[in-house]
Image (cartoon, rainbow, N blue to C red; front, side):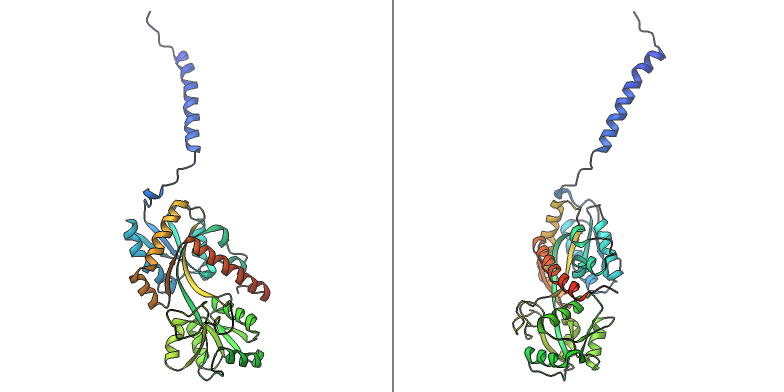
Length: 337
């Protein structure tokens, strides 16, 4: 017997079928998106966010990495400058990224003490950023005007103790590594110079030459030409040992301040959400690139020592700096202005 078409009978069949299809579609969309496997990554251009303007040291470090990293990955690597808030605008964007293709090229403070200096900072560097590679480091140089007293570190510090608050020191701003390094020196050497902030290391150097201030911690690259010209006196460097970029200067640690170590450094960080396999791949690639002869040469021209330390080594450096600097910030009540 032929089956007769019945609209009612059809609706009775189709309604549960439609409901089942809707349920399975909703269940499928509710499943988490599969993370890309490291072997299939990257699937689009990689973005290097930099929190400082073009031509700045972090920007030039990023550009030194971009071309060899692009060749290694087979995708464009784009340097994206987002200056402002001492690099924390870009760091916030990195912390919030969820695309697995955004990284940040950052300085010390962005990865360690940003939240301590400014509680309003929109990310927590210790929770929201994942270390990838410590690219390069630079010791600071404790320097003074050419006519400063003392023939070595200890004699100079003795003169500083005698001067008390009559001496002043310069830095490129509250909360910078130059500022915090001097506060560390004050606590370890029992000296008491007064802080005078300036807009840049170049202005700090000019102020020392003019006799406006009596000492400062300045980047080697900013001070070296004036030392060579006889306008500044080098006292010692802030690395644990002598800097390979200026081995003629003693370290403060070897000259009587054991354990003194605080450098300027630049690193690559990822969002905490980035897939661990991708992070591990990037850590290996970027660290190798930073140690390559060509990139080390470019970094040396900027006054940096290319070290190319992996994610674990960077994590240890972040912790050590955080522990040391947080104590200084708390003891002195330092807040970013």
